[in-house]
Image 1 (tube, rainbow, N blue to C red):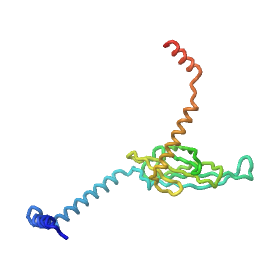
Image 2: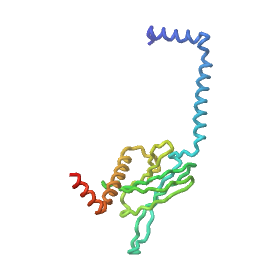
Image 3: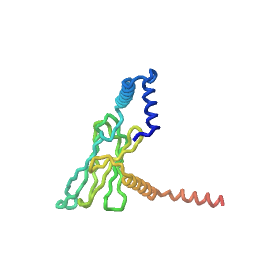
Length: 202
């Protein structure tokens, strides 16, 4: 049900539309259509002028399983997961990284840093799997030209947006940094020099 205020506004709108300054409805629709066509043309032109931008759909990732006889006992076959990454774009994928972990294990996983992946090329990472019944989670991490980080699942080949994967990747990076810090031990001579300096300053 229309209120008196709404009817008054409706009458004022059509009275203004009837004035020469407002133009007619066809001109309004034509102006909106022209503006939309110009914006679409600018977007397509910008996309065509940046052919080296790597988009997630241009990066294929998948996983395959392989059996290989053990070196210790030829009757036993070891299981390996081959992780495949293919670049179908015209741009360079700069230092992509693959992260793997076991879904049922609370431990952090492993990081594999790859070299730059040129256009129309592929790379393969081989991961030994102790038990083929476990669920091995694997994601590829890479950045586009704008600096945005993308994650692609190697099981579903889909882009991952969840924060759970990002938290796992951060945990893997932190664990690797902690491991590197534990491996570093300063030389004994350096420790002696530091102790001498502290004794003199005190």
